[in-house]
Image 1: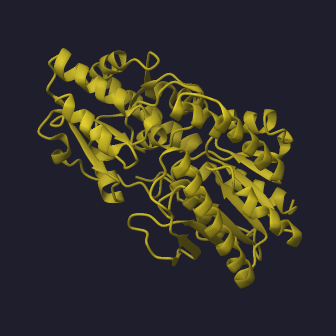
Image 2: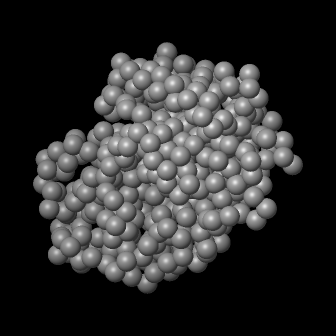
Image 3: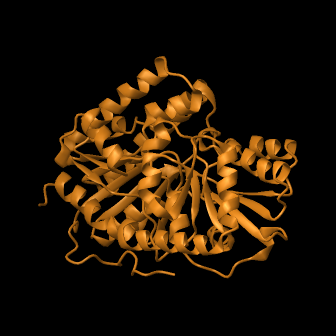
Length: 411
């Protein structure tokens, strides 16, 4: 499937030779977190010694592993957080393990840079003591947490203000910030008051060499002619309930029984979404795979006729780049999504855009695409071309290394 060579085993000149990097991630285990894993492999290819601290997770239970030359240190976490008390417990436990493992790694193999990947905006607390030893801090800005809090809980208040305060402290502590898109770059400059030249855009594009196109597997279509796919987290703010409502309109209001929906991913809302699907009489039309290995992911992406991104239109999603959109595009699949700034930037003409948070309009656009194979093929080809020519990880290697060279004063 790849139109490019992927991340080379060695980057010419090894610009980070004799440097050592510690990456700290709290919300996903490695190598499951695709963006961070691509960053780690790139830094390793540039000559750096790379260590990662991350939580354990399903299928990633070893406390230590070396994979592709990267040292991975995993720690336990309480069950997935729910509510203020749950988050406080999770963050406290994570900070304890991150601090403990960071010092252990420092005395074992040292490091010159800590890269902190949010959420949460607390990892700067681990990095601060190492400033005494000349260690630099790079903030890898994955989520805008004030907007995420508001999208998840539908309110502001004390914890929303706390999120904003921690975000400011994180930017203040950072020597360099990495933004996933231009919207996040503007936040780093405007809210974080970072100098523009110290904010580097490194998009979460897919590594095309690792995505495999496989023969379509009819079983995922459940005997139906068409299939719409979703790949991503099953959380409250992902809008899966809107997708279920869209499926209900297609099946119950329009009488269409030829479209299957297949949803790949795990998360805190998975059980509730399954219950909602059953309540709506849609269990035969919507398949939930849960968190799935790569072979299942590749099968679903190869089999589906189009990809759906039901993320609600809100301040968080408007400014965030969704990995699933670029994965759909990498597989030449057209997209239906709501109209948000970064979603439109990523997909352009490869997507149809439904009215904000309107499941009926989303349903109508899904049906229109399913009934027009020529349009699907044209849109899919445009999306694939855009990923290959502009958005894939192969185009992010140069800005990532530029951020590191600036932090380490190697220019």
